[in-house]
Image (cartoon, rainbow, N blue to C red; front, side, top):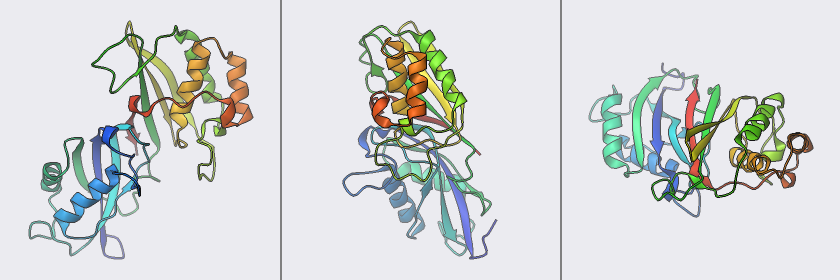
Length: 257
């Protein structure tokens, strides 16, 4: 599994509560998950470590599953040996990292595997509830107007008929393409007053899921027809889509390789 340049590649699978962070990616103006993870790895391995994530969650957004990779020189030692004990490294990381970041596993992988580019799909969940609930407020969006979830599910199916989602991309985002392949999009009820939106795609644009949810809610409120929803997608203008929903109710749920 060693690369030609004498490096070994490792995947880290982790989860985190994004409440305290300015997103996954290192930011000049606030703490990030990537920064905390790199710092912990650098401390334990006594090397300057750079980690590459499978994606970039925004400020306040959570991840039940995030994957990142890092490379190590073949002669790098951990606890006195060059044979890195991945289970022990995961244990030590969990001891060093704050309470809101948890490592599930560390594993050595083939040098051609890439946390971001080798991923074949990603799944997000967006949670909403319709009655005041102090135990849901931190991880679900509270809404008090009537919503037609049947209509919202009809509109969600429409997403799988398109590939260009420029209408749901954050204005000014630095992206080379707005093409995505959505393979799953549906609302799932978990109780009489709680639902979540599940969406799976090969890739996502910045702010895309929160913008899609905001536009589907316009359909559910009767403010946007199904034809109107199609027109929003086909128009490719962010200003025509619904508002971006709050980040605290969004979870990166799963990543496939």
